[in-house]
Image 1 (cartoon, helix red, strand yellow):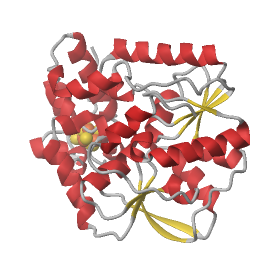
Image 2: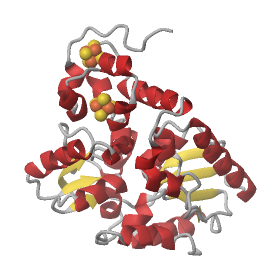
Image 3: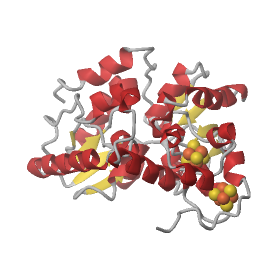
Length: 327
Ligand code: SF4
Ligand code: SF4
């Protein structure tokens, strides 16, 4: 079997760019040789891939290791009990408002942290396009655990339900959902920023300079970032936070590698930024929980929606409440 890291030249770039690899003094080829549960401490952020002169894809490597461990029944899944319990068959799914050609797909975390904004944005799209709304988990957390069979079941289930409702186009509000679902569903998947632009809904940031934390899934392609920029025009400048590799919630690594996740947030905190903007509700929520001053979601800023993020367990109740809402 060919090795994914057979061209590794042991330059150490991946190690120096990653808090997790650095902690254990390992590079990606060491990780491949170990082929063990340490792969669950990786944030699947993709920073190593950017840094590798040999084009080795660390994220893909770690995911493959996880999948093979799951197949061999070698993973202590107990550590991920709450995630698997909630998301394997997403307990808060609600398709009752989805019967329409176009449907919004807020995902899990946006409704958790911004329940009022979720309703307001649903109303904007309903008025403008007659869009419906669907609450479900895209399946990415389960996929990132390496549970391929479960992932397939989740995707099949979403496809079946969308077909039954007559949905032709899904608008994702979370960058994770967007990149995860876009090549997997039978319907067209669009990110909300491109859709806002396409249908001329006013969504513009006030002019000025913004410190922006890019969520991992958009870091490579920057499709969402580009759409956000083009909605806002020349008077808006983004200063990207480049040296914090992940908010700490990627790859479910926080369950196993809490210290490194906390270190990442400490690095962000140490920057002392007055306001930090992002476009992923998970990042935003984690910033808030980590005591970072004033995290803001760009979507709310663009649509001029004011909503304070909830503290502690309230986010779980918010997400649960949408199971029963009729919008
Ligand atoms: S945490 Fe990110 S940079 Fe480190 S190994 Fe995993 S994907 Fe690569
Ligand atoms: S950056 Fe690439 S070539 Fe360098 S040590 Fe890491 S995997 Fe090997």
